[in-house]
Amino acid sequence: MFIPFRKVVVSLSAFCVLTLAVACERQPTISGLTEDLVGTALLRKGGATTSSSSVGCKTIQSGDLIASTGETIGFGYDTFGYNYQAHIFNGAYSDADRDHDGGLDSPFSEVNLQMKWNDAWLSNKDCDGDSKLDRHYGFGSYIGSGAWLTNHDIGFNEDGDRWTYFVKIVAVPEDAGKRDNVWYTGDGIEIGPVIWGAFAVIQQVITGEIPSDFADFDLPFEGNYRSPAGSGLGSYK
Image (tube, rainbow, N blue to C red; front, side):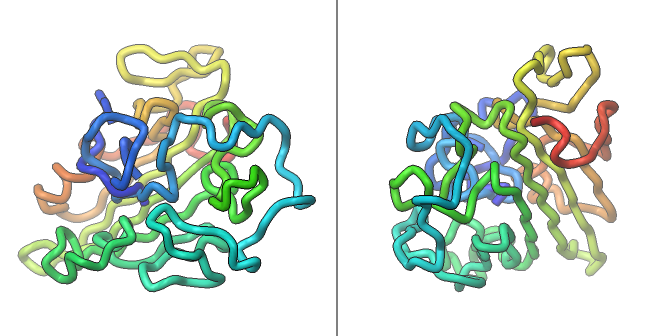
């Protein structure tokens, strides 16, 4: 998902993505998240201030919820590769922006992308009544919400050799501090490089030779990385 943009750099001015419309300035993307995954990432959605409850919430099964591009969200996988009920995308990298128009001529259409996220990142319910899936419900922003996302890209370079790229991204806790484009816990332990403002990369794993055009477009920084504070998901709420 990471959502559709142009490459995300750690120094960031960017998930100014998920490219449909992002909350940051135009920049690269990480696995092209789409607005449905982050959208106006750091902006509050719907003004919710209480914990999510199934009471009064609309579900995907109701047939009343819509995606950022206007289609009704259905149960199970859609034509692009999104399964919002299961919190997963599995399909062509070029389809993560919910646009088939590019076809095989679209950038990285032969790269397979799998994204997974939790309820805080993008819920499978609408509890604030705007007919869209909730983001960081109950929180004024993603910070402190415990939201996380993983991206796993698989492709082949010009020599026919397989390469992979895997990344874990988390919303930072409320007591986190930032310096030199790196997030730290309240105790001063490094969480990870800043990405999309309120988020940190806590793990990045690369195997094989990633084509330079893909690396320039999608990777926030070079090389493998594991957060000194730990690479487990769901630890920063």
